[in-house]
Image 1: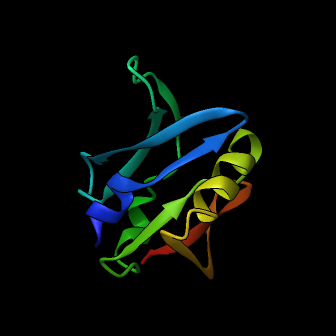
Image 2: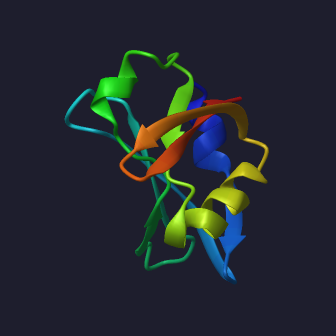
Amino acid sequence: MNLDKIKAARFTVYDTPVKFSIEHYQSGGRVSLQLITDDDMREPYATLTVNIEEANFTLADDEIIVKAWSENEKVAEAALATGVFKDTGRRIPAGYVKAQVWKVL
C-alpha cells in the first residue's frame, strides 16, 4: 500500500483544509485513515475508514473499507477526488448501510 501518497494528500472538506493521519486498527491491524486539520492545530476532523473484521479477509493488502454514508458523504467524495484512491465498486454490509471498498493507488 502506498502510504507515502496518502501522507502527501491535501484537500478541503466543507472549506476546511485537511490531511490524513495514518494509524492501524488494533483489531485486525488494517490501515485506519483519520482526517486532521492541515494547520498548526492538527485537530481531528473525521474518520474515513471503518473496520469490519469479518470482511478483512476478503480485502487485498492495498484496499480499505470506507464509510461513505451519513455525515461522511462529503468527506468520502473529497478524499476520492484526490486521485489517491479508486472505488472498486464492491460493497460490504455494515448494519443498515453498505461500506465501500477502495483501492489505494
